[in-house]
Image (cartoon, rainbow, N blue to C red; front, side, top):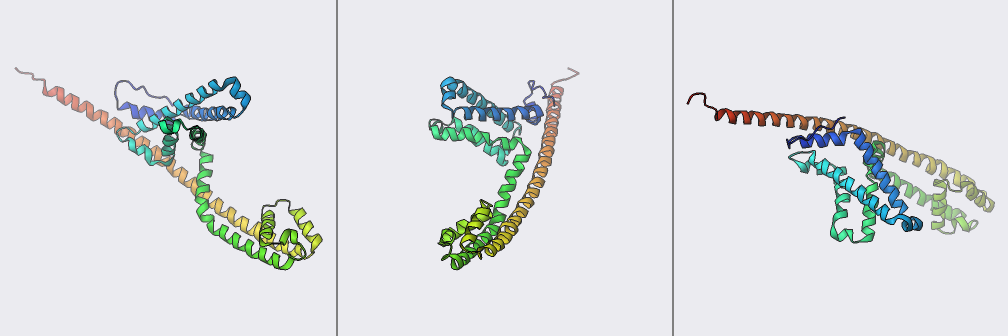
Length: 284
């Protein structure tokens, strides 16, 4: 996509900024800058790298911050005479906060906060990659819906841990000595962490732990986990639909704003022609 020339007409600036931000090459450049910034911050954690080129790595970080600043300014200018519309999008607000917070005097002198702000700039890659953005939105939508599944899992695990403590605390104190030990034991089974050794150790103390474990694994590790996966998949589908709708709305909005700019240019030209015609008198 060719970026139009700004010329001297200020009404062309929003259209040029929108074209620039929508340019695939510019989007690829933005992603590359994010990765370079991440690599520079990672290199600063190595003592030998800091000794060899700390000034260069900090210079790279400042260059990346300058690029992000220009990108945010282009996004604000792309809305023309209504720049506050830029902040209606949550991703735009996030970009603005993490970029311009680095210039605030009180935060810039704090080394810990400054490092956190530098690290937060890497999160902007979620915006550059639609697939990552969809996963992040899906995770946010899945958490409230998963509250019931988490509550059910907690109740089932607690009840089953109490059953294990009542039945096996005398014969297998290592795994069922307290309800806390039993809960930790069941959590290992849900996570499939060393499940075979846990079951063999318990069976060596009491063979009746086998049906106890099998029932819990069938219900807890399969049924509840699959329910949770169903909630996550549903949230993924909803996030995909939201992303598609947002893309269509953004494209329609950009087209509408471009048409408004053209209409404004036409009106300005007509007003100028009318003003010149008023000053022209054929007969004196």
